[in-house]
Image 1: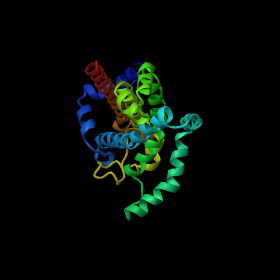
Image 2: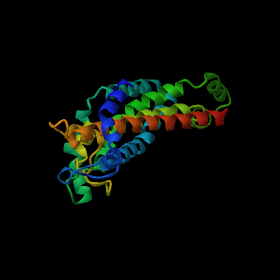
Image 3: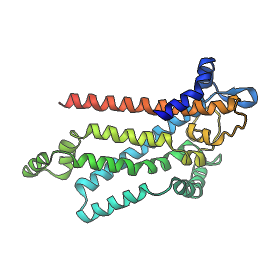
Image 4: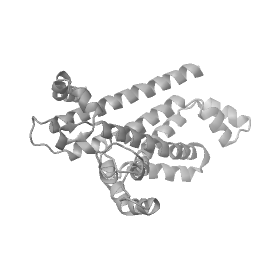
Length: 263
Protein backbone atom coordinates (compact mmCIF):
# COMPACT_ATOMS: atom_id res chain seq x y z
CA UNK A 1 0.00 0.00 0.00
CA UNK A 2 2.87 2.38 0.78
CA UNK A 3 4.38 1.72 -2.63
CA UNK A 4 1.00 2.37 -4.27
CA UNK A 5 0.75 5.70 -2.45
CA UNK A 6 4.25 6.57 -3.66
CA UNK A 7 3.30 5.89 -7.29
CA UNK A 8 0.00 7.70 -6.91
CA UNK A 9 1.73 10.77 -5.45
CA UNK A 10 3.99 11.14 -8.49
CA UNK A 11 1.31 10.12 -10.99
CA UNK A 12 -1.45 12.28 -9.53
CA UNK A 13 -0.40 15.48 -11.38
CA UNK A 14 -0.85 13.63 -14.67
CA UNK A 15 -4.30 12.43 -13.63
CA UNK A 16 -5.36 15.89 -12.48
CA UNK A 17 -4.03 17.56 -15.65
CA UNK A 18 -5.99 15.18 -17.87
CA UNK A 19 -2.89 13.48 -19.32
CA UNK A 20 -3.56 10.08 -17.78
CA UNK A 21 -6.03 8.93 -20.46
CA UNK A 22 -3.75 10.10 -23.26
CA UNK A 23 -0.77 8.33 -21.70
CA UNK A 24 -2.79 5.17 -21.21
CA UNK A 25 -4.24 4.81 -24.71
CA UNK A 26 -1.73 6.44 -27.05
CA UNK A 27 1.53 5.17 -28.50
CA UNK A 28 5.14 5.86 -27.54
CA UNK A 29 6.92 8.37 -29.78
CA UNK A 30 8.90 10.94 -27.74
CA UNK A 31 10.05 12.74 -30.89
CA UNK A 32 6.36 13.51 -31.56
CA UNK A 33 5.58 14.34 -27.92
CA UNK A 34 3.68 11.06 -27.54
CA UNK A 35 4.42 9.21 -24.31
CA UNK A 36 1.60 6.67 -24.26
CA UNK A 37 2.14 3.26 -22.67
CA UNK A 38 -0.62 1.34 -24.46
CA UNK A 39 1.84 -0.77 -26.54
CA UNK A 40 3.74 -1.77 -23.40
CA UNK A 41 0.54 -2.55 -21.50
CA UNK A 42 -0.81 -4.81 -24.23
CA UNK A 43 2.56 -6.54 -24.58
CA UNK A 44 2.68 -7.22 -20.82
CA UNK A 45 -0.79 -8.79 -20.84
CA UNK A 46 -0.11 -10.93 -23.92
CA UNK A 47 3.28 -12.13 -22.67
CA UNK A 48 1.99 -13.01 -19.20
CA UNK A 49 -0.98 -14.87 -20.71
CA UNK A 50 1.22 -16.82 -23.14
CA UNK A 51 3.62 -17.76 -20.34
CA UNK A 52 0.75 -18.95 -18.15
CA UNK A 53 -0.80 -21.00 -20.97
CA UNK A 54 2.54 -22.69 -21.68
CA UNK A 55 3.48 -23.25 -18.05
CA UNK A 56 0.17 -24.36 -16.52
CA UNK A 57 -0.14 -27.84 -18.13
CA UNK A 58 3.50 -28.68 -17.34
CA UNK A 59 3.19 -27.39 -13.77
CA UNK A 60 -0.06 -29.25 -13.14
CA UNK A 61 1.26 -32.51 -14.63
CA UNK A 62 4.49 -32.28 -12.64
CA UNK A 63 2.49 -31.68 -9.47
CA UNK A 64 0.41 -34.79 -10.13
CA UNK A 65 3.60 -36.74 -10.74
CA UNK A 66 5.12 -35.58 -7.47
CA UNK A 67 2.05 -36.16 -5.31
CA UNK A 68 0.37 -39.25 -6.76
CA UNK A 69 2.12 -41.08 -9.58
CA UNK A 70 5.92 -41.16 -9.23
CA UNK A 71 7.77 -43.52 -6.86
CA UNK A 72 8.90 -42.05 -3.53
CA UNK A 73 12.53 -41.53 -4.56
CA UNK A 74 11.57 -39.87 -7.83
CA UNK A 75 9.10 -37.61 -5.97
CA UNK A 76 11.85 -36.48 -3.61
CA UNK A 77 14.25 -35.84 -6.49
CA UNK A 78 11.67 -33.85 -8.48
CA UNK A 79 10.74 -31.73 -5.47
CA UNK A 80 14.40 -30.93 -4.77
CA UNK A 81 14.90 -30.03 -8.45
CA UNK A 82 11.87 -27.72 -8.43
CA UNK A 83 13.04 -25.97 -5.27
CA UNK A 84 16.50 -25.54 -6.79
CA UNK A 85 14.96 -23.94 -9.89
CA UNK A 86 13.32 -21.27 -7.75
CA UNK A 87 16.78 -20.08 -6.70
CA UNK A 88 18.20 -19.73 -10.21
CA UNK A 89 18.57 -16.01 -11.11
CA UNK A 90 16.32 -14.78 -13.89
CA UNK A 91 19.29 -13.51 -15.87
CA UNK A 92 20.62 -17.08 -16.15
CA UNK A 93 17.46 -18.24 -17.94
CA UNK A 94 17.52 -15.16 -20.16
CA UNK A 95 21.21 -15.44 -21.00
CA UNK A 96 20.90 -19.12 -21.90
CA UNK A 97 17.85 -18.45 -24.08
CA UNK A 98 19.64 -15.59 -25.81
CA UNK A 99 22.23 -18.01 -27.22
CA UNK A 100 20.10 -21.15 -27.56
CA UNK A 101 16.46 -20.24 -28.15
CA UNK A 102 16.81 -16.98 -30.11
CA UNK A 103 18.84 -18.53 -33.01
CA UNK A 104 16.39 -21.45 -33.08
CA UNK A 105 13.40 -19.12 -33.33
CA UNK A 106 15.17 -17.10 -36.02
CA UNK A 107 15.69 -20.25 -38.08
CA UNK A 108 12.13 -21.45 -37.55
CA UNK A 109 10.54 -18.12 -38.47
CA UNK A 110 12.94 -17.49 -41.34
CA UNK A 111 13.00 -13.73 -40.77
CA UNK A 112 13.67 -11.17 -38.11
CA UNK A 113 16.07 -11.30 -35.20
CA UNK A 114 14.35 -14.11 -33.32
CA UNK A 115 13.50 -11.75 -30.46
CA UNK A 116 9.83 -11.36 -29.64
CA UNK A 117 6.94 -12.34 -27.40
CA UNK A 118 6.90 -15.93 -28.64
CA UNK A 119 10.58 -16.27 -27.75
CA UNK A 120 10.20 -14.82 -24.28
CA UNK A 121 6.99 -16.70 -23.41
CA UNK A 122 8.44 -20.23 -22.95
CA UNK A 123 11.36 -18.88 -20.92
CA UNK A 124 8.98 -16.93 -18.73
CA UNK A 125 6.80 -20.03 -18.47
CA UNK A 126 9.81 -22.01 -17.27
CA UNK A 127 10.55 -19.27 -14.76
CA UNK A 128 7.08 -19.30 -13.18
CA UNK A 129 6.66 -23.09 -13.29
CA UNK A 130 8.50 -23.85 -9.98
CA UNK A 131 6.33 -21.36 -8.09
CA UNK A 132 3.17 -22.92 -9.47
CA UNK A 133 4.39 -26.48 -8.89
CA UNK A 134 5.22 -25.86 -5.23
CA UNK A 135 1.85 -24.21 -4.68
CA UNK A 136 -0.03 -27.02 -6.47
CA UNK A 137 1.82 -29.72 -4.52
CA UNK A 138 0.98 -28.06 -1.21
CA UNK A 139 -2.65 -27.74 -2.31
CA UNK A 140 -2.91 -31.40 -3.33
CA UNK A 141 -1.34 -32.52 -0.07
CA UNK A 142 -4.04 -30.64 1.84
CA UNK A 143 -6.83 -32.80 0.36
CA UNK A 144 -8.61 -34.78 3.07
CA UNK A 145 -6.68 -38.04 3.42
CA UNK A 146 -9.86 -39.86 4.42
CA UNK A 147 -11.10 -39.39 0.87
CA UNK A 148 -7.84 -40.76 -0.51
CA UNK A 149 -8.00 -43.80 1.79
CA UNK A 150 -11.63 -44.42 0.83
CA UNK A 151 -10.65 -44.33 -2.85
CA UNK A 152 -7.78 -46.75 -2.15
CA UNK A 153 -10.15 -49.15 -0.39
CA UNK A 154 -12.35 -49.15 -3.48
CA UNK A 155 -9.36 -49.96 -5.69
CA UNK A 156 -9.07 -46.61 -7.43
CA UNK A 157 -6.01 -46.07 -9.60
CA UNK A 158 -3.74 -43.00 -9.14
CA UNK A 159 -5.28 -41.38 -12.22
CA UNK A 160 -8.81 -41.98 -10.90
CA UNK A 161 -7.89 -40.46 -7.55
CA UNK A 162 -6.50 -37.40 -9.35
CA UNK A 163 -9.62 -36.97 -11.51
CA UNK A 164 -12.31 -37.69 -8.95
CA UNK A 165 -10.75 -36.77 -5.58
CA UNK A 166 -7.80 -34.40 -5.91
CA UNK A 167 -8.96 -32.08 -8.70
CA UNK A 168 -12.53 -31.44 -7.45
CA UNK A 169 -11.19 -30.55 -4.01
CA UNK A 170 -8.29 -28.38 -5.20
CA UNK A 171 -9.80 -25.84 -7.59
CA UNK A 172 -9.43 -22.82 -5.27
CA UNK A 173 -5.77 -23.66 -4.70
CA UNK A 174 -5.18 -24.22 -8.41
CA UNK A 175 -6.67 -20.82 -9.23
CA UNK A 176 -4.53 -19.16 -6.57
CA UNK A 177 -1.44 -20.88 -7.99
CA UNK A 178 -2.35 -19.57 -11.44
CA UNK A 179 -2.68 -16.12 -9.91
CA UNK A 180 0.82 -16.32 -8.45
CA UNK A 181 2.23 -17.50 -11.76
CA UNK A 182 0.44 -14.80 -13.76
CA UNK A 183 1.53 -12.05 -11.38
CA UNK A 184 5.09 -13.38 -11.44
CA UNK A 185 5.08 -13.35 -15.24
CA UNK A 186 3.61 -9.85 -15.46
CA UNK A 187 6.13 -8.44 -13.00
CA UNK A 188 9.32 -9.98 -14.38
CA UNK A 189 11.83 -7.62 -15.96
CA UNK A 190 14.93 -9.48 -17.11
CA UNK A 191 13.31 -12.03 -19.43
CA UNK A 192 11.27 -9.41 -21.27
CA UNK A 193 14.19 -6.99 -21.31
CA UNK A 194 16.55 -9.47 -22.96
CA UNK A 195 14.24 -11.53 -25.19
CA UNK A 196 11.31 -9.45 -26.47
CA UNK A 197 13.31 -7.03 -28.65
CA UNK A 198 12.05 -3.94 -26.78
CA UNK A 199 10.22 -2.30 -29.66
CA UNK A 200 7.73 0.31 -28.36
CA UNK A 201 5.47 -0.24 -31.37
CA UNK A 202 1.98 -1.73 -30.85
CA UNK A 203 1.87 -5.54 -30.85
CA UNK A 204 0.82 -6.88 -34.25
CA UNK A 205 1.98 -10.48 -33.94
CA UNK A 206 3.36 -12.62 -31.12
CA UNK A 207 6.44 -13.39 -33.21
CA UNK A 208 7.35 -9.71 -33.50
CA UNK A 209 9.35 -7.47 -31.22
CA UNK A 210 7.59 -5.77 -28.31
CA UNK A 211 8.25 -4.00 -25.03
CA UNK A 212 6.58 -4.71 -21.69
CA UNK A 213 5.85 -2.28 -18.87
CA UNK A 214 8.67 -3.60 -16.69
CA UNK A 215 11.30 -3.44 -19.41
CA UNK A 216 10.05 0.04 -20.38
CA UNK A 217 10.62 1.26 -16.82
CA UNK A 218 14.14 -0.19 -16.92
CA UNK A 219 14.94 1.31 -20.32
CA UNK A 220 13.58 4.84 -19.97
CA UNK A 221 16.30 7.07 -18.57
CA UNK A 222 15.09 10.64 -18.20
CA UNK A 223 17.20 13.13 -16.29
CA UNK A 224 14.69 15.95 -16.66
CA UNK A 225 12.40 15.27 -13.72
CA UNK A 226 9.73 17.61 -15.12
CA UNK A 227 9.55 15.90 -18.51
CA UNK A 228 6.63 13.75 -19.58
CA UNK A 229 9.07 10.96 -20.40
CA UNK A 230 10.11 10.76 -16.77
CA UNK A 231 6.56 11.05 -15.43
CA UNK A 232 5.36 8.28 -17.73
CA UNK A 233 7.52 5.83 -15.78
CA UNK A 234 5.37 6.41 -12.70
CA UNK A 235 2.26 5.85 -14.77
CA UNK A 236 3.75 2.53 -15.91
CA UNK A 237 4.35 1.50 -12.31
CA UNK A 238 0.87 2.59 -11.27
CA UNK A 239 -0.82 0.72 -14.13
CA UNK A 240 1.26 -2.40 -13.44
CA UNK A 241 0.30 -2.27 -9.77
CA UNK A 242 -3.40 -1.85 -10.55
CA UNK A 243 -3.28 -4.54 -13.23
CA UNK A 244 -1.78 -7.03 -10.79
CA UNK A 245 -4.28 -6.08 -8.07
CA UNK A 246 -7.28 -6.43 -10.39
CA UNK A 247 -5.98 -9.78 -11.64
CA UNK A 248 -5.69 -10.94 -8.04
CA UNK A 249 -9.24 -9.84 -7.27
CA UNK A 250 -10.53 -11.61 -10.38
CA UNK A 251 -8.82 -14.91 -9.56
CA UNK A 252 -9.92 -14.72 -5.92
CA UNK A 253 -13.52 -14.18 -7.04
CA UNK A 254 -13.24 -17.20 -9.34
CA UNK A 255 -11.85 -19.30 -6.49
CA UNK A 256 -14.63 -18.17 -4.13
CA UNK A 257 -17.28 -18.91 -6.75
CA UNK A 258 -15.79 -22.36 -7.33
CA UNK A 259 -15.85 -23.08 -3.60
CA UNK A 260 -19.51 -22.05 -3.28
CA UNK A 261 -20.51 -24.16 -6.27
CA UNK A 262 -18.71 -27.21 -4.88
CA UNK A 263 -20.30 -26.82 -1.47
